[in-house]
Length: 303
Image (cartoon, rainbow, N blue to C red; front, side):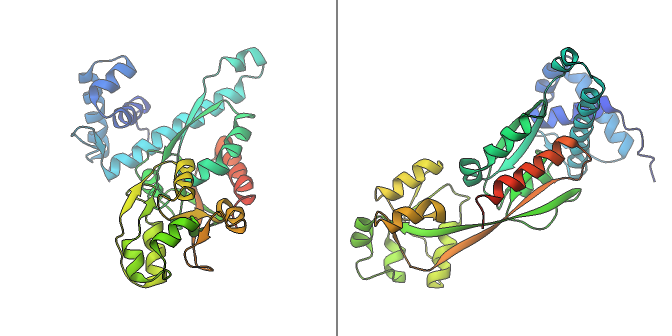
């Protein structure tokens, strides 16, 4: 077996940069070297570990082994930054410490409601910036698995290798529409035939909530006409204005339902989506504080 200790940190950073930017040329510009140097560093690392680390397509794709090392490179960078910050005791020196970048995969509803509270709290104590990668909660774990992000809000409880899982709670969604929309499209009630024809609103092509709800209430796989609106605020606006029915978080819809501005398609029926926080198993104060703040912020919103 190869001795994989003491991997070249420069080569690891080069690999992570190339995968992140998608080409050797872009990585070379970022690292101020030639594309040939980038290629040679990655080849040397591949020889060292005895594995192919990148699929040389455009954009570059990390192999399964490459994903492990991309994650390692990001972990090393974060720990190094935290160590430097701890060593710099006086305020003037600390102000020169570069910010650590923390990429996160998050779902739109959490971003729209409570997640920013957690990020603001962490920035009050750490020199960090965040890159938020938006994806459906059913797909965020894949970004974590690939090493694209350090943590993710996900509906998948299965731990990604090298990660810890924290259960946050669940999001409850109601199928709602405007009263006028219901009178027009469901005059005889939410029958399977009517729901198959009635226009609905979907966040994007990865959003399965509406279809999940239809399967629960009809026990059929229906494919009604759909309008795609990838904005939480405008999705809700479109439902309220009668463009179609859609799934809204219960705390988004409750007041409007009570006032008669929205109606439930099938009263008493809903979809509960569990939400978990998965993060790298890393002894990092930033990650520990971020996890604590995410749990606290989620606790005020999720059931």
